[in-house]
Amino acid sequence: MNSKLSFPVRIRTHGVQLNDDLRRTIESEAAGLERFNSRIVDCEVAVTGPGRRRRGGTSFDVVVKVALPGPDVVVHRSAIASIPVAINQSFATARRRVKRQAHRRRRRVPLRRTSGVGRRGRPRSRNGSRRGA
Image (tube, rainbow, N blue to C red):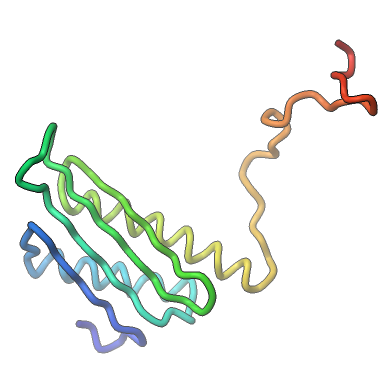
């Protein structure tokens, strides 16, 4: 474990063996989360390999749980390709969610990329019918 971290990182595995490179990758990704929110209390990563009775391809599941003051951030991702792909996908999502929660804590909710005009449809008139229809 990295001594620079101000929070513990726990790595659990089930049905898969992680080599030292993957463990270091997980620890460095967890350390990178602190850049977006310095109030992280704990980080738990669970990596699950394919079961004995699997159908289809070999699916690897990665669950990242980041404990923060307030609601925790929990990310569950699975990837058929490989363990590093599942780890990268789950930590990319965790970064976005930790960053969003830090913005909400500061009362600065980030704007969405789309304006949302197309999703709402045409505006309704006062009586509830569509305008211009």
